Length: 336
Image (cartoon, rainbow, N blue to C red; front, side, top):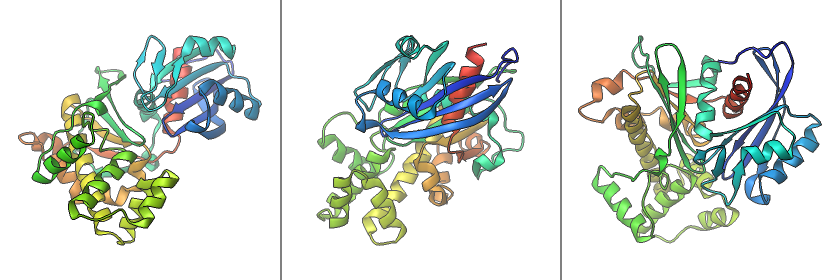
């Protein structure tokens, strides 16, 4: 929880650095109260590096940062991260020196998101299943977007302690003949088949192409155009919503089933009896499908642990700035 700041107003620069977008925001901290002052989003691949984006943001905002905390999509070691889906290396000490900051920190993006959980209210969350009324204990976060992030929050009896993982890069484990076919299809394309290769924007496209190949169909014009424009997952979702494509409908059905399965796997790994939270950009867009029996049956169907899993609440994070809020909360706490 945010602590005292000795009565002084602070400007905290918070960031969510992903493979598709870099989102930055200024928060003003007055004691333990955080207020959003200014935010911007930048296309990651349109810039040479994070330094360039930060410099541009500071020029546009006209604020001076006291502290900075960035949630970054990749493993953080000793204040340094080489991003998983971008050819960037980010170093907290270098950022602090270049931008004359009193403090700078890097967190894994899901760890940063976890720090926002205590500040989220009922309007910031959609309930997929309420679980047991007395649910308490560890939490788990899973977030499909450009990649797949996973994190845990340990409850030590008095304090929540978020921690990062790289669980999205664990090997995919098929559970049906259809999923075995999918695994074989992806293995022929090379590289190890991880959960991230399926539970992500690129994963939606990969599953759709699997169904096309399975049916012996060429890629339709609308899909070829969407790939050219760089957003095939959105086009597949739109085609499924309009029921224009059997393969698109099958894609989202399987995607939702796999999301439920891996969320259930994560709940067991973390013993997340306090709840599982779905973050990232995809879950809010597929909220209606995630609320279906397909997701929940896959989530609960981790025999012999069904009874345990049925008692775990599952919620989707709707707060659009949750990752930024979590990073700002950490900057406030870490600086004392």
